[in-house]
Image 1 (tube, rainbow, N blue to C red):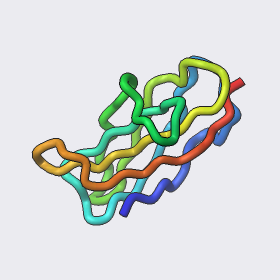
Image 2 (cartoon, rainbow, N blue to C red):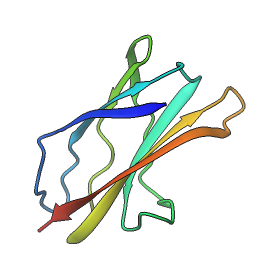
Image 3 (cartoon, one colour):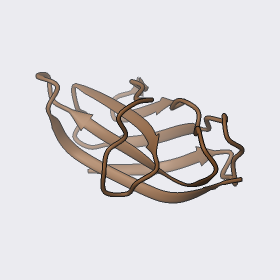
Length: 97
């Protein structure tokens, strides 16, 4: 399970800003990645970052900046040791003005 604990600050956001993201992943995956995209159904093609594992199942990072005004969606993927997605969480929309 992936649980979004918080995004800081909560928004709305300006283009070019990347908020902090804190996620709990249970069970703890081998790796995670996060990105903002313009769609809730099509994954972003750029901007993916690998957040840090702070303590067991707690992960945090600063995804790349939200590039354009409009609505953005936060994509969070838990990955196995081979890099395959084993859990997915898409949240939003987040307003970018």
